[in-house]
Length: 137
Image 1 (cartoon, one colour):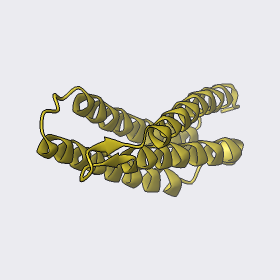
Image 2 (cartoon, helix red, strand yellow):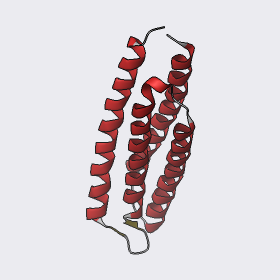
Image 3 (cartoon, one colour):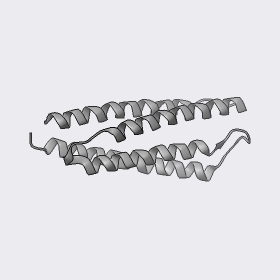
């Protein structure tokens, strides 16, 4: 494998691993027992912290200069991850701590966009891997 492909793959893998860790944090937060308004506030604060991590990872992913062979796919992956981040933000913004309610339509819309973006990222990642593995050395 060419060094530029290997370097690219390593950079993306590091970001992917960080994305997974942040996703795990969201999962752990979502199983917390909510008993008070303070619990809801802490939950939302935790989600906002995770969102900031995702936003930072988006900036890192967007700053990678991909090899020419996969420029288009990288751009698609960056776009899909941006949509994932926006969906996460939409879900968080649907939580109204002060009035102790969730805008379920907005929350559901965020989940659907997040799922769509996740599927796109997986598909694009597979295409990138296939192209790199078949590229001449």
